[in-house]
Length: 500
Image (cartoon, rainbow, N blue to C red; front, side, top):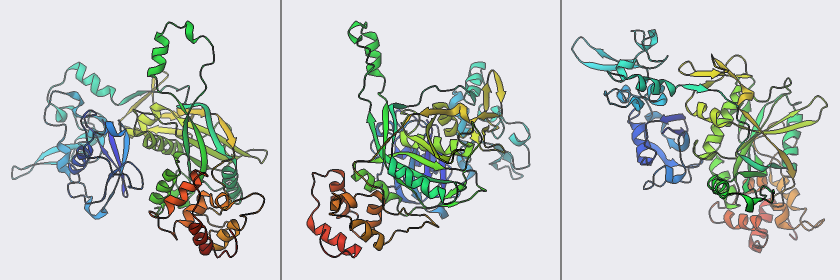
C-alpha cells in the first residue's frame, strides 16, 4: 500500500505498507528509512490544517486511508535531508517480486536508481545509479530511473517478472460515470456569481482557484421502476453491497492566498495559508466540509476542458478527499470561464479512478502541450493497443451535472479575502455596513452575520475555541439563539451603534 505524506516542504511517499496492519508508526518508520533526522512540528493528521491527529493505536484502514491516501504533517525543513541508507529496501533477495513496487523502486530515498559501489578500501556503499558512474542511467535499470533486476533480487521467474512489469503498465480506458450521485453538484449561485465577477475584472485573463465548502448528501431517489418485488433477490443483495453515491451541495467558496503566474503550469502559485486550519475547523463546526474546488481560466478552444496541471491537481485533491483509492469521493472540480457570447460558463467534472491511480504513482506529468498528460518514462500507457507517451486529458474526465440553489444557511455579501485589485476589501467598515442591514427587509442579525467570509474575518478578533463555536452553532441551526452578549460584542467590533 502506498501512502503520501503532505508536509510544508512537499509530498513524501511511503510504499510497501501492509494495508491490514499499517499504523501511523509504520508511516513514520517509512519516512525515517530515508530521512532519519526529521523533526515533526505537528503529528501525522488527517486534515490539511494538522488539527486532527491520526489515532496511533488504529490501523490506517480503520481511519479511512487506503492505497494512494494522503495524510498531513508539519516538519522542520532543516531536518529533512535524505540519506541513501534507506535505499536498500527491496534489495535483500527476498522471494516476492513485489518487494520493489513502483514507489519503492522509483521514488527518491525509496530504493530507486541506487547501486552498490566497492571502494578502494573494500567498503561497500550505495550511490545513485545515474551519478555518471554507470548503472540504471545507462540502461541497466529494469525501467528508466530504476535499479537493475539483479539488484532487486538475484533470481526471477517469468511470473514474477510479469507481475513486476504489470505494476508499471496502465491500459488507458475511459470511465463513463463519476462517483457523484444523480443529484450532481448544486452550487450556491451568489458564491459562484461573486467568483466570476472578480474574474471579469481581468477579462478572465487571470487564472484563480478556490475551495468549495458544503455537504455530501445521499441520493434519496431510488430506481423508480416499481419492479423491486419481482427481482430474484440477488440483484437487491448486490445493490446493498454497493456504496450509495452521494451528491454535492456547495454552500460557500473560500479563496486561499495565491499569486497569478502565467508561467506556471497551473497559471497560479498557491501560497502558505495561515488561516487554513481555522477555516477547516470553522467549516466543520457548521457541519460543512471541503467538497470540491473551483478554478477560473481564460477562454480555450472547443474541446479543451482542463489542462494537464489541472487534471493532476484535481486527482490529488480527490485522492485526499477520499483518503486514497479505496473509497472514491464525490469531490468535484468546477471550472468557470467566459463563452463566446460573453456569458460565464460553469461546468463540473471528476477525474477517473485510473487517473487518480496514475497520479498516486506519479506516472503523469505536465509537458509542452497542456491538452495532454505526459507519461513518466518509468511507466507505460497503452492506448488502443499501442504504447503512448501521452494521454489526452479528456480521457480522464467524467462530466458532473450542475444545479443551482441559494444557500439557506449562508449569504455571500462580504468582501472575499486574498484578492488584489478588488473594488472592496475586508475591513471593519465593510463589516459594519453588512451588519447594518439587520432589522431591514426581514433580515435578522444572525442572517447578515451568516457569511462564510465575514465569519472567517470575525474569527481574527474573537477566541477561536471559546467564542466562535457558539456563534457558528447559531449559524448552522437558527433554532439555537445567539446570545445577546455576542451580538453586543460583534457590533462593538464593527463599530456599530444602536440596535442590532
